[in-house]
Image 1 (tube, rainbow, N blue to C red):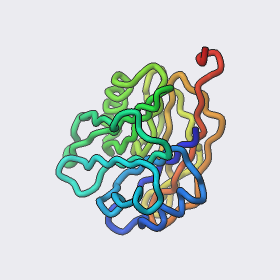
Image 2 (cartoon, one colour):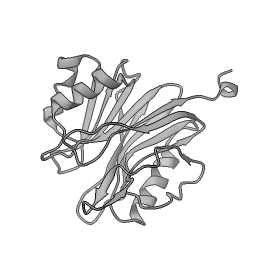
Image 3 (cartoon, helix red, strand yellow):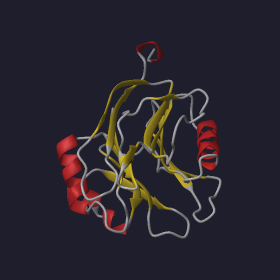
Image 4 (cartoon, helix red, strand yellow):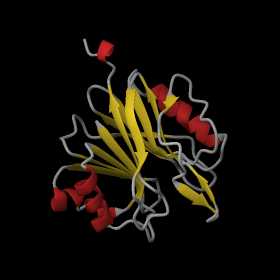
Length: 202
């Protein structure tokens, strides 16, 4: 399964047309978005597929997922430890074979690791956590492997490339990971190709 994650930058970032172009060119099975606003809600009307958006509490933007196939169940929302300014949630999509948690975590480097552990505890044995983790350094997420691209996806202060956009997996194989061409957002999208190991398919 090909999964793409993209922080759209809600105020002046990626447009609906850019998101549709991403889907047409990259053909993901699942596209998870952070900082998505109501302007993205017409995506299934314009390009087909299935869609769910969950705003962050008190914000105009939040987490959204577009899926080529129908959802088994509507994505669920897990409330996370709140930051100083923004309440955080994650969006969990049940794909049957494994679960995907779409995240946009706090900037505090202790807090976002606590949020990650809460998500890990809530997920099934085979799962992926993907999105804008706002992490610098190692995640300290027991049982999960960091399989996302190693190149920078965001330029800190316009100078130093960092990789806040991550993918962590448990009980899954990552066959490939890459950074995709960006649009108007300040984040580059990432793509991962995930599968259930052969020995677990029996």
